[in-house]
Image (cartoon, rainbow, N blue to C red; front, side, top):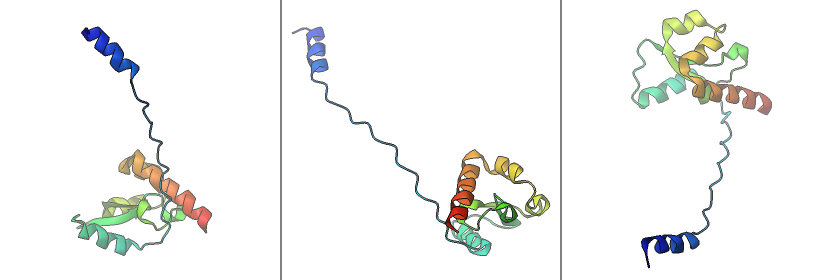
Length: 113
């Protein structure tokens, strides 16, 4: 049998490929956590927190919950100067993925209350 014949024989016996479904994202954990506790977790993970605050991505005054998905280490002076008025700048600072996750946490935890 020629190489072309072997190719045709192999093509005729192709098995069905099962396409995996995308997993649903896990629900957001709405368990409240203090900033100091989250800070201790970051230090335990080896992050240097000298001169750094644990700030909210979506400010608490703007509906942001005190959950791990909504916290981000940020320079102390920057965090205090931005206050609650610059959630959009904070989102640019932390990146699209982290910001989306924080906003999802804010919406989900608000519905849970």
